[in-house]
Length: 311
Image (cartoon, rainbow, N blue to C red):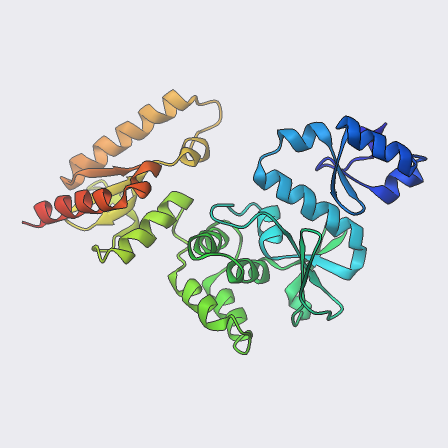
């Protein structure tokens, strides 16, 4: 019966259990058995769902449960709002859920939930699943404002690429926050965002290149047949020097065609890459996640290739 009371995230509120005839003594027994896991006062998760969930999913379970608990008084926002829309979780603090008060109460942290207070205009919120959420552009800026540098820019890149937010919207809403304490830091993060990045790995590689004073590539560099037909795009392109590809795992899922196996997709991508090299006469530099963790060697390798091609 408990399973039928839970929502799509595997979360059930105490008040829903009580309404269904489950008293506090029984709830305590269910917790001891592991059938329920207490997330915070008034919010529980199904034990099986919680233990099988990754950090991102656990964050969303806590966030959605608390969101439901407060009804119309709050909007899902910041990191929680971003993850609920599909933004990447890389380098984000997932230990606390985020809600924005719609009644002007001050910022506070309570029971693993950050309650934010700030000016909320009509176009800053929208309805989803019958409840208030901050708009995509407000969510992007709020999430970036409370996140570390890398995580913030990964979120901003994602919203620009996949989240329906434009650079003009970001700048417009950023200007409305000019008196907010975090404005300068957030403005820097926004200035570094680029909606052409298609993955977290691409975003992080671009940031590390900029920090290392390496020649910056063109993003989504196009290669065409002599007829003008587009052969493909490389993630990075140093005109007349090299092409670059970021081989993150997400690429193998995003670019697979319906009914195509990973092996078939890899072969198709290899043929595309071979043709791009033939047409440009340029080497293809491949980057994987491990290259970020040995960046000094990666930067030296990239610099050698670019210098050799420039000679």
